[in-house]
Length: 324
Image (cartoon, rainbow, N blue to C red; front, side):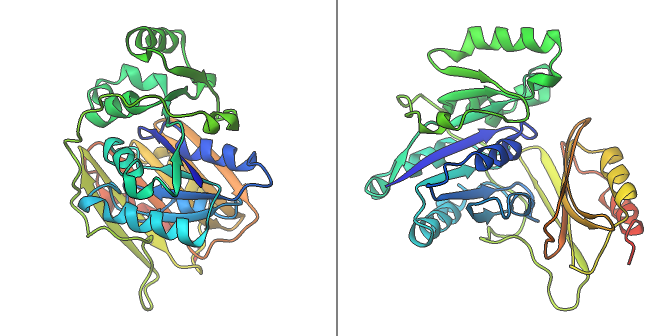
C-alpha cells in the first residue's frame, strides 16, 4: 500500500523548497516517489529535485488534471508499477486546482493500491495582501481542500502579515491544523497524519491552457539545436521557458543579475555556469540561490508573470550572457 500526500500552494509559496527539506529528512528505510506538475513547459522542478533520493516523474505544461485526468493517471500508474513507493508525494502546479486530483486519488480503482493521507497546502501570508492572489479561485480552493495549512516563509513576515494571517485563521481555519515554517522546514511526521473528512471544494473553473497537448516528459532539444523556448498561458498567467544544451555555459554573476532584475513574478532555473551548477528560485523580490556539485544534462529556466511580458527582450538579454 502506497501512502499518498498532495502538497499544494500558490505560485511562490515554497512547495519545491519544502519538498527538498522533506527529502533530506526522509526515513532511510522508506522508498519515496515524487509526481510533479508545472505550469510552464520546460520542466524545472525535476532538475531541482534530481538526485535527492526519490523517484521523479514530471508532467509539465499546465494542470495535470486536465484532459480527463489522463496525464495524472498515466504518471501515477507508472510510478506505482515501476517504483512501488512506500510514499508518493504529488506536487501540482501553483495554479492547479485540487478537487479533481483528490477525487481521482480516492476513486475505487485506486483503493487497493493507495491510501490518501493529509493534504498540505503552503501559504505565504504576504500573499494575503495581494488582491490578485486572494481573488484567484484556485488560491482559495487550495486552502479549502487542505487538511494542514503550512504558513511558510515566517522569517520574512511583517507585523501586518501576521495580523492578516491571524484574521484569515479566525475566519477560515476551522478544525484544521496550522503550522508556521521558514524555508519549508516542517516535521516530516505531518505526512503521516490522516486526511480529514471531505470538505465541499468548488469545481474548477479555469483548467485549460493555450499550449501544446499535455505531455508526460519535460521539453527536450531536437537535432542540432543549441536552445529552444516554449510559451504557455492560462488562468490569468503567462510563462516563457528556455532549454539550452549541455555545452552551453553561462556567466554566473550576469545570470544571477538577469534573474534578479527580470520584470516578472516568478523565476526558476537550473543553469550550468562557469562556477558550476546553480539553482535559481525567485518569487517577487525573494531570491534563493543554491550551488550543487552535480552536473545536469542541460540548462533550463522558466519565467511566470501575471500577464505576457516582453519575452523577446528578456531572451535577447539571456542569450548575451552565454560564455559559448
